[in-house]
Length: 509
Image 1: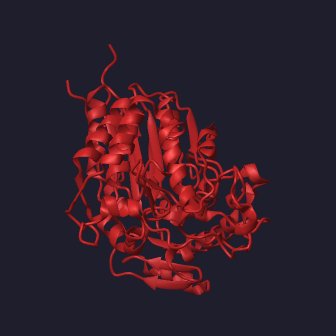
Image 2: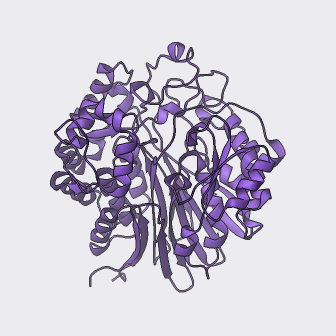
Image 3: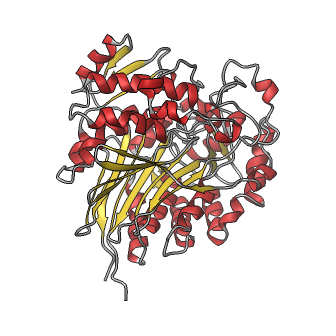
């Protein structure tokens, strides 16, 4: 009989850990635990992820093979490119920003890489949670207040998050989602129902009624890309990231500077991030739509280029990362997202599904690598990472919008050290660089306490600077799980900026 596996897992909400625990008790491995957590988060963290969002994941199996799963949805076949190309930039929210949601198909693909349990129990637990309800967490409350006008403008959002008196629920209030519970129950019996039948027709109908171009046929056309990750040897370690249209190669381009010094505020790293921002701006897009200059992003200091970033509004609280590792050496880092807080600002009343606004990241310039077009995927910020140095393997991911590469670069050196305390590493101050994604017209470095030297280095480069007196969401919600292969020792940590936890789960005997 196979020995039961322990699983280290980190996620941004306690309900995710509760669902993961149930999966491990049932004999599940790291993949099962991650998927169980992911399903729960689509209920309790609707501002960051939902059935109406996308998924990018990496899975390392016990034999050491790493596989990338890209379930990023495409623009509708009937998208009005001519109309949109006349705009200076894509709308920030609304029906034009919704691409086909990839999360459910992504879960199926991840499960196919070695899950030991069926997906149905994860859906059923999530359905029960949606039916019985949950309390508004501090993180969800910040998002509700930050998107107050958007939520009040949408009938579906008001039905779920309204307080019944013309306002919105707040921290500690109870939220129930009966329509979402019915959808999750239906998916427990058939995950493919997300893309054919009632669910797809309901969502497409809502978008069409609002002036969108999505059809049920677009849902049926969705396909997951299961592929090889991009691998690089940097700093004595192997690093794996997902390929474009997501930005994993951007992290690889700055890791040499990040790993070179224990000082995460050193001017070389700040300069490398500044160059990488411009390289990504000019080059990231969907390979389906034309050639993508990956070399420019892998070597930003040698090939930095000017460009105009596809410009959505502020990308706040856009993502959840779930990372898990088990004693067999299986490691999962799974990231799912609605892009910005509450995505497109549309909740389909018939299904209870919050729809993402990932399409707002398209460029309206037909010559840009990120140009919008039928069947094309927008550039993605989602950045799951797996790394191995000697016998230590880590799964790593974060919330943080376009800044995810910079955020992960500041914790990578410490986390790949087996003697480090991962919780201490995630609790240290960080800095991020961005422009419109952080609420600024020009490239600006925002520094948390303890990272003032990075702001000084940015100012020397001519960048804007802003200093915060406390930690803030835009600096990322990092999750990490690690295993030392030689003795199967596990540990994990969850970012203090989020509402989550990390633990090592052992199955009930």
